[in-house]
Length: 330
Image (cartoon, rainbow, N blue to C red; front, side, top):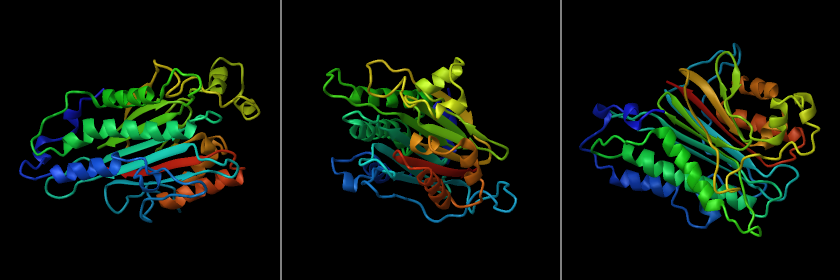
């Protein structure tokens, strides 16, 4: 685990800049949300509504050669989509995208916070659990990591970044968990945080994060599902998983117990690549091979999100579909 103080250069901080208004704006826009879903800055969408929050930017992949190509400017470019799908009546997914980049003489490392939560289908409060998990986790991460980056006086954080992400998931779990059997709710929660060229991950459930490098697509999260466990012990083949009637049963979920085991790790990103996060409404409908083919078509992040969504819908769209795509170049 890396201490946050190692991620920023003190000489890059502007000791004279008055950033209190900026800090308040970031906190208010990202996490200070009242119970008004129509105006929430998080990526919560009404049923049957596709949400996109990024310009039609230049893609990071070359369509002709499928080699990584430089985007117009270094940093992060991201988009997201959260849709009810073709069958469900309620969207139990939630997602969040926050890109923060400070340019000028006193620059800061690119900061990208991405989250996907999938409320547990069939549970009474699944949609509320996914919403709450995103809000609680985002508030903790922004308070503990991003707002200190905006301080005029450099005061390195003493808590490692990975520990902050783990605490965020624990807080979300405590906010959702209720021992009353009549109050039932749970959700997956996958968090990816990019600070400079480092990727920090905290993960529970079967939503996924993929990393597209120049040579391969890699799933960087493990599915905490019964089907994956049966595959690991050799009792279920990958080919049979699609026909396994309880393949989506989760062994770990946020809000389903007082104690929670959280996957937590750090990766160094390549100089160029693409990050994909999604609920199983995407990964459960189309194969990893199909996902990689679409990611390598040389389209912008927004066009790629549309293509992945259309592929999932063409396959039936049986679940809510949420995805985040972030291109990076350092």
